[in-house]
Length: 68
Image (tube, rainbow, N blue to C red; front, side):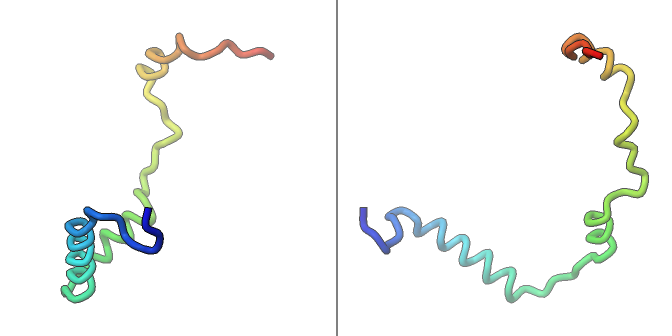
């Protein structure tokens, strides 16, 4: 292998990365800060503690019995 040189065949991938980077740098963006805040903070109605009883019944056969 040649050390210090990029392997052959990366020309198209590198050109695409350069195009995307240039597009991100110079294109004007209309940022939706409301959508960004919702994505970062998550939904207010986060019901992750509630599990559907049908799902519990479906997977209950695979759970090891408790050893108390």
